Length: 414
Image (cartoon, rainbow, N blue to C red; front, side, top):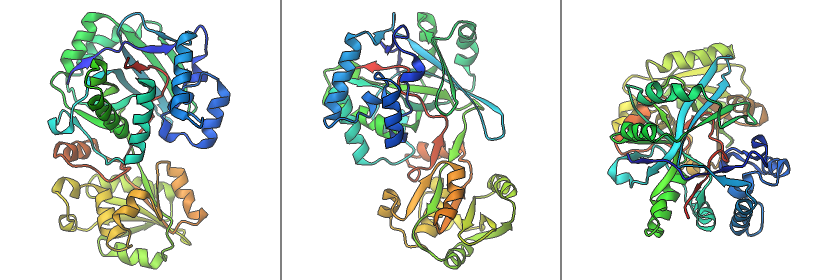
């Protein structure tokens, strides 16, 4: 994969507090949070990535141009690569440090298999993002890419000398994730990063809509050399701090508990638990050996651990790489076959909700949900196997946490 440094725009910290102007990606900002970010600063990046105006794309362009004129946004001294460390504590109090770097990569069609998607996308978000980049001629957020380097060359040979320096940015976001950024502008270091990734395949972990938007934009602007590249964040699959969280399935359609249990019994062995903690622990333990999913039902104090019966996954009408995915088993055997969800309903989340937050998923039962399927943590090897086979996971299969902030680095295309 061809990697290039970014002729970046960044916030001028002489004029703004960085904590006041950053924001998460547009697709996790609801209306209330959007209002909060607007009030936080008249220069918050939300005004570019998710403008509230009636002519939101044109308004975003006008704000962007105005901020450049006022030197709220300024160019870095040299084309650079940005090393990013994201620190947070998991639910058990353990400190996690996910590490990676922000640069540009050559936009490749999926047919080349140099960039692999793993989830399906929808047309609406892609058109929205295309309208924004067409108006502003810039990318404000990164694609999240995963590559694999068993030797960990970048981590061992480049990064240690930068960690001794003062960070370019050191800021905590609203989820108390600390984001520490170092600028890599030494040409020899940049060349080593380029050489390390030149034979690597990239997996899109997050940002499928943004990547496909960049593909569309580059085809519309073939004369623009900068449009042939997209800004991405790259992390090594060998980093033990690369954690993938599941996305749970909340059944909002009215279905009686007995019908759900009868459906599940056809395909899964069921163990019952009274303790939430033991329930969650058993899901992960059993999932190391076989496809395992959790189930909570309305009007029940029990927790059910569902273990796919021997020989069942081979009956799923899907390629073998997908037969190993717990969500494929759940969607094909239970949701579609037994509970009468159509593929369109699953894609549109009609009668079903996809919930990343475990606590919200559990609480959904108290708020009227018929059932909640608690998914196990996805395995990177399974995702890579699916992607390498040219296949895609079900919609909203994975949640790479933490999200990447918008506003740390901007990639202009003009």
